[in-house]
Amino acid sequence: MKLSVVTTVYQSSEHIIEFYHRMSKVAKKVSKDDYEIIFVNDGSTEKDLEMISQLSLSDHHLVTIDLSRNFGHHQALLIGIKESSGDSVFLIDSDLEEEPELLELFCNEAKKFKDVDIFLGQQIKRRGNFFERLPGQIFFFVVKAFLDRRIISNVTTASLMTRRYVSSLIKFEEVDANLATLIILNGYKKKIIKVKKNLSSKSTYTLLHKLNILLNTITTLSAKPLTFIFITGMIISFTSFLFLIYIIIQKQLMDTSIDGWTSLIVSIWFIGGVLMLFLGIIGFYLHKIFIETKKRPQSIIRNTIKNKKIT
Image (cartoon, rainbow, N blue to C red; front, side, top):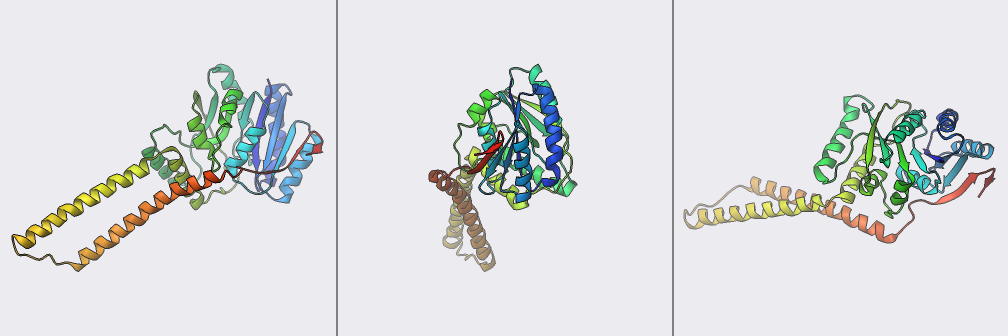
């Protein structure tokens, strides 16, 4: 049974050689030499590309896919998945935060649970101190609040998929794809495997990037923000109507005028802020529709290096 290992390369030259040797050793052990390791260069430096290209030219088990620019981690993984040919596909990062030896653990679990189509790694403990972990905790709290579907928190890149699962996964044609959301939408029976991540390098995911992933995940999987906008608008409108009735009663029956420019200005600013927030949420949905209708490619392959040749 052939095994495909898919990994991305982005500013990780200091780890590539060690990753290659350790990954090759464990892949050979679990697959009896019937395997391939696919490096997807996601717009990394020339040094990274040169290293993985030389490895691919000297080892027929290796394939280097060189993307034309940086398309992002998830898109790079998806192109690697699409180009894989194994009966089982193992995803892992090449920065050694996830041990290459995890492959053996995942394969052993796959032998025990033959009815499971995807095995997902889950961090035992998130990296960093409390303040570094806090954005991640907020992320999953907000996502779970807005989604009807069950989402698995603290999932790692390390995961093992069957060919049946991969065949269904690559049918999704979203341009602005997020692998985590596609895994949720793809369904199938899943199993969680607890894994430990090492702290080998600084995360390339900035706070802005994490916020973009949060918005992308929610707007891809849920229409609850639009429902929230509608309900809030109804509440504000109803409250305003009741206040209007109150003012009319005060003026007509009690001959009392309502003063308070401060409260009026605060109300205007409040309503203005709410409107801008809601327009932003609607605009995000419209942006996703705009991107999807363009049908741009998820990623572009510049070169593929394998079997002692460049294509």
